[in-house]
Image (tube, protein in one colour):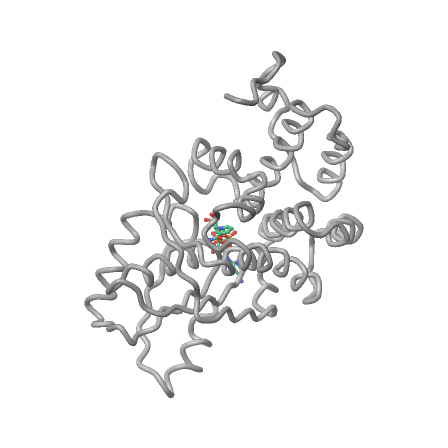
Length: 266
Ligand SMILES: NC(=O)c1ccc[n+]([C@@H]2O[C@H](COP(=O)([O-])OP(=O)(O)OC[C@H]3O[C@@H](n4cnc5c(N)ncnc54)[C@H](O)[C@@H]3O)[C@@H](O)[C@H]2O)c1
């Protein structure tokens, strides 16, 4: 959608080649990685070449992984075009999926720059706004109560630069403290263990990433309360708030994994 515009702005100064992938999570695959790698080799990119990831999180994750492995690593720039990619373009995690699990093959490779033109979000369909706000809400839950309250009161159909900056700030602060996920970075995975499983079993692309994350966060809140009943979590209120924003949940019985006491050491 925005490729020609970008190319027009680049070609005066650079030699530009392009590789366009089909939309959707299924493109984060070995097959697409291999095809793109072949195209990069045929175009004779060298160690001074730069990969520009123009697209959503799927493009960003795949292009970042290509850049991190081409000739043992070349530069790359993230140009996110979805709201969700405010999260995926920051932090340096890149990768592809395997039929046995999501994001299982990848690397840490920081972009040289992230260039975010919010006007590109104007063309996002409603479902993708909901998906992107899933990660904004996550950043609120794990690091910024005011951000969470703000989104819950204003809704999930548009975003201001200041709200976006707050959401990115939660992620950036955590990544700066723990780039390689030895500790606190795991907080960014809130809801994601379940989310990744849901995405894999439902077939990559059936659920948006954000839909899976919101379901995963709901489940994590529920599980936390089961494990630690004294925690000040009101699961029904949280679910109600998320539903009011437009999210829907998989049937609760799917989540109701165990009525027996849960062995936390398992
Ligand atoms: N690396 C990380 O730290 C990290 C963090 C969070 C998520 N992710 C990954 O990000 C991916 C999800 O990203 P996503 O939600 O951006 O998905 P996506 O890249 O599939 O984009 C969602 C849809 O929006 C379309 N689209 C993109 N930009 C558009 C625009 N400006 N206007 C209209 N349509 C547009 C795409 O074609 C696609 O159909 C997942 O694979 C997830 O695992 C990675």
